[in-house]
Image 1 (cartoon, helix red, strand yellow):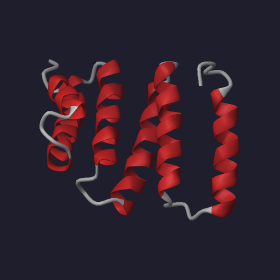
Image 2 (spheres, one colour; image 1 turned 60 degrees about the vertical axis):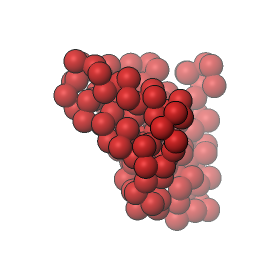
Image 3 (tube, rainbow, N blue to C red; image 1 turned 180 degrees about the vertical axis):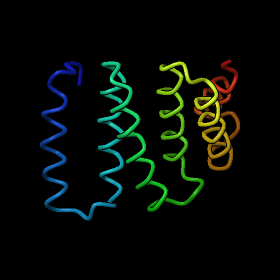
Length: 123
C-alpha cells in the first residue's frame, strides 16, 4: 500500500475481522502485526513499530518451529527498527538472531541469509 495514511484504516478493518473470526494467537495476526509495524517504520513512528513487531514475534514464537524463516524475518525487521533509532547494539543482536535462524532453515547462498549477514556488520 503506497499511501501510508490510508494503511491504518485498512489494517484496523482487517484486525477487526480477525478478532471476530480467529484465535488471538493465529499466525494471520502475526502477519498483520508485522505489516502494521512496517507501516509505522515507514512513517518513522518507531515506538509503535517496535510494539507491533514484538506482537508479531511473540505469536510466531508460539506458533512456528524455532527455525522457521518467518522468525528470521521478524528478527531482521526489529533489528532494522533499532538501527533506525541508532540503537546499534540491539539492532546487531536481532540481526545475529536472524542470521542464526536463516542459516538453519535456508541454504547458505539464499539472498535472505546474505542480507542478514551484511546487516551484522553495522557498528
